[in-house]
Image (cartoon, rainbow over all chains, first blue to last red; front, side, top):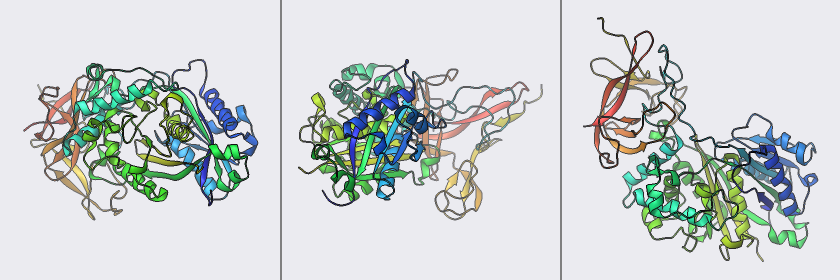
Length: 400
Length: 133
């Protein structure tokens, strides 16, 4: 090990699910302390902290967590970036270390959503008197009149646009994605749902936004995940047993959505993922064929399918064939979402981008238990937040 | 009985005898926007002209929405239409059964307007959708 790389030293996540008796600070504090213990460090070793949450973004989450784990006066970045919030927290700490202003830092993501149900799309409010308001001069609520802005619908449209442009993609291919992820989840004790469903059950479950049925949508839920990052120089000063378990961040990339023609009416989740992927592969000096596992942002089954193509995991236009071939199953050529993915593992929004890094790190350490991908050396964690923001981290196992 | 006053559901819908959508078109690169922009998100120029968007296009994506906020009638078809002049518009597909057998990618559609509601003053809200052409 040499150079100025940044490494994951310690990491932890809660099982995702429902924690009505705890609050977000409790969940976050728990994983921070666990991540310290995992890396054999304490809060006094931290030079910087970044805390990500979406729904409590204005509550000084990082400082509230410090009250539970240690107030040492270090700088805190409270970050929010839709579903890429957790990845943004990791990137903030990564940049602080890269800049030489910190040698070790803590990234934590947390969300407590309870049973929020359908996100976005607003509510149906009949105006008493029509008055234009907002940037479109709308006189009444437009959701359900001028199309949909709900998450299952937006991502359904992203998938169907791919089906329009490419052969071999339809309802069944999207459903197979959910089949795979539910199957994978049965091996992950940290997943919110750990139940296998048949393809028929998935296709026959209540339609939310065709082609996404209920079993093709991620649940809302609560959870937290944390990661301690360290500079290479400082890592080298630590005990060998700690160094052996450290995982190298070979690439850390954050992108936003560049202009595309359709972007004003349909958030573009493709271009910024493609841009992030090409930057990440270049920085890491690897290609998609080198990946032993991928955790990608399957908020809906339609989303996972198009990201096969966006991340270069399949031939251009070949995402339908890719799932049909079995390639992204855990025994396939490119295991995708062996954690169960957002669809089964859950998606407490602020935690998701850190939890993906936890998952990949755990496999590269060889500590993933029943769901371990044997011999995994390189993995990719991807998240995307509508609006839009994409985070990709490529992680590499330490050389023996 | 007097004809009720009508207002468009959004400002970019121009109602009248021949309804159409009006976009702000960038004078620099031709990019189109349905809301006001300070500068063009594509090229950065701050010089816009009104453009009339074609009423004809094809269905480039859709979703059949069965779950929405309370009060929104479901199922309905949310559509992304690419007009003949290359502008993507989101609205509902109307006058077409909301099931996968009747909605097909690439189908030709055209703009249509209808009265979507009436306020306490008796003013009608005119909305637009796309119907199979």
